[in-house]
Length: 366
Image (tube, rainbow, N blue to C red):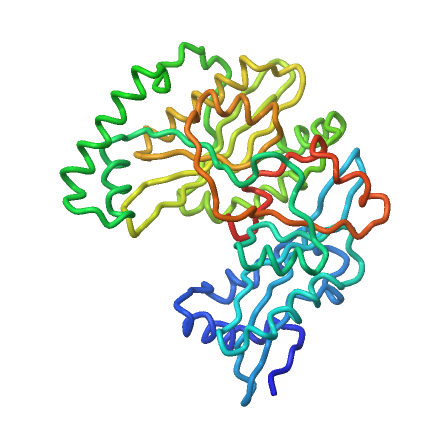
C-alpha cells in the first residue's frame, strides 16, 4: 500500500533514481539541495520547514514527489512567508494519490501565501479543486516575444511542427516573416540613446540599496530582490554564462535593471532567452526603461539569441515590454495559482493591480 511522508535531504539517491526512471534529471545532490540549504527565505526555520513530500510504494521505492520551496514576498513594506510547489510528478499507477501530495502542501502551517507557480493543465485543475485560485494578474497565460534571427526561428518552428525540409523551407519562411514584420512596423531600429546603460557580471551592494528603495515605493506584491536573493535565484545561471544583467544608472545610483536568462530549446535548436525580471524606481521614466530594454535586446542579439520572450509583469510594464516584444503566444493552461493563508491577504490579493509576477516568481520556470 503506497504511503506519503515528508522528504529529507538523505532521500536524494532514491529521488534521483525516480527522476531518471521517468526521463528527467534532478542534477547533483548539491544542486538539488540548494533549493533549501542556500535559500535565504528558510533562515530561522531550517529545522521545521518541510522540504516536500514523497509517495513510496513497496520496498520504499519513490513513485511520487512534490518539493516545497520557501520564498519571501513583500507587500506594502511587510514581509510575507511563502511556499512554492515544485517538480510535482507521480507515476501513472499511483496518480490516485496525487491529491494527497497537493493536500499536504496546501495545509502546511506557518505560511502566509501558497503558490503553484508553473501549473500544467492537470495540476491546475487539481489545485483549483483543492481551493487555490489563478493569479488575478492579466495575461499570465500569454508570453510576448520578439524574433532576433528570423532564419533560425523559421527553422526551429518547422522542426517543432515536424514539417519537412526545415533547414531550407524553414529558413525561407523565417525570412518572409522578417519582411512582413518590417512592413508591419514590428521590426524597428530603436533610436533610444543608451547613456547610463550597461551590463554587469554580478550583483553588488547597489542592488541592496535599490531593493530598499523599491520596497518603499511599490504598493505591489513583490518577491524579495535583495542582493542575497538575486544571487540565490540567478547565481548559477551567471556562473554558467546563461544570464546577463542590464542596468541603467543615474545621479542617484542604480535606477533600473533587466535580467535575461538563456533557456534554449535543444530539440528544435532555438536559442532563446527570457526577460526574467524588470524593475525600476523613481525618477526613472518610460524613456529610460525603454532604452534599457532596447539595450538588453541588442545584448541578446550579440550573444546569438534567436528569440526573446517575456511572461507576466504588471500592466504598465507589460505595455512597455510589448513595444519591444510585439508578438504573443498562448499557453494551454493558466500557469500561476495561489492561496492566501493570512486572513488579511484573502481580500487584498484578488485585486489584479497588486500583482507584478514574472518568470522570476516561477521556481520551475527558472
